[in-house]
Length: 306
Image (tube, rainbow, N blue to C red; front, side, top):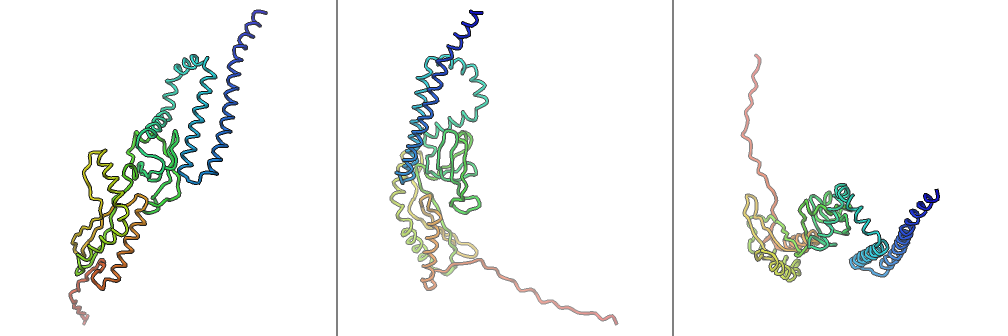
């Protein structure tokens, strides 16, 4: 009886260091979480720029995770061997049950240490297009564009996508190494209008509105040309024409910032319509016309019953 009691006391006394270490770890977690919340609140109050604020919050959170991990390892360093054996036994089951989580973590590492995208980029994943507003360990958060809203405007929906998608679906980045897009407007011009006047007018308007991007576009394209096997491209505005059955179709092609497509197209159309109004008939917009062919006359004769 006495021996059994001694054995029980020894067994329970062997648990005391583990319980004490666990209490220390819980206290460390509470203290770190409290300090982290205070620092984040101060960052929100004192840093007005959203990008800088986001990066600082992420950096502080990562440092807090690292400090907690170091405390945990140093606290349970005597039991690490036992933990390794236990994890080895149940590792297969954990890997199978949490395979999506593990792939998402691997996706987060790939996103963090590669050039897939970063916060602030506009990307398309499958059928979802939006601006990246947060990159978590498991999910990427997007402010969605499009869908029932035309063009590239926000529709107000926040979409969270698992990071594992980068290994399964293509990722379209609108603002990666080359943060510009080629866009174009098509203008139907009536036959009889001056082709050369129309062309020069479009080029003048394009230079006025999108000329500010030309120098930065050329620099970005040259940097891209050094990295990838791509050919030289014309980044200056260009006008081409096609003769159709009803009108001459002018296409103005230009490069614009990925966030200014809609507003730039609005300015281009507005300026061209102003030029049409003051051109005294040299520039005339065309519209769809239909010709009604006359019907052959009909002769109706009524036959009397008598």
